[in-house]
Length: 279
Image (cartoon, rainbow, N blue to C red; front, side, top):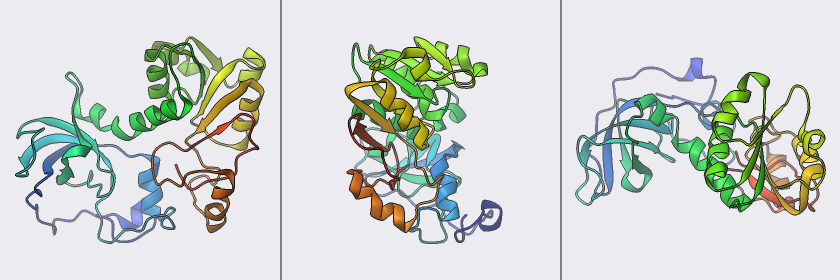
């Protein structure tokens, strides 16, 4: 249970004071078997995003979770007791609790063969990757570069782009080269030895998906994007801290303020991006 904003070791504590409530009409009660920790979790625990959204305390953190359905609301039609499910419980979180009520529309069945820990790691990262592909308009024949291809969002982006019929180049460290290839990348660039411009040259990609962040990613992307190409980033240059200045600046670049999910898309002919309120 989170009692206030601050370092996790100072503001989180085990609590048995909160009873299990029956689910609402369109809610599903889940016995949590596993939960995932994403950057948004520690950012919101520490209060780095309270300029965007505030929490009421006490609060049970962790958005991504997986478990077993133990009760359903009167109007729930998609799930029944005993089903294995996972979700990004995007507002109420609750992954750190034993039981949590989740809206029916936020839940999905756990794919056969997946352990609960694996299922809990999917929702937010995979949704973010899919949003990146949608914003980049990735499809058959698209040439896509994924920076941070071995990371949580990046490895999903590689798989999805490959499944969509795109040519995929992933940027990762040498130790993850084979892993990124296994995910479906057609080419892997060792970030410690070279870079995308040196490996592919100008006008070589339609879309660059940045899962790392930093101005240098945009500078490099401009060198390889074709005219009208798209740069999609999930990162913020404040390194996890949203400041009043960044919130004021973000509309100047036409960015959409977001609390979660993928960041923003800008065409390659646009000016360099400024920090934005998203992640």
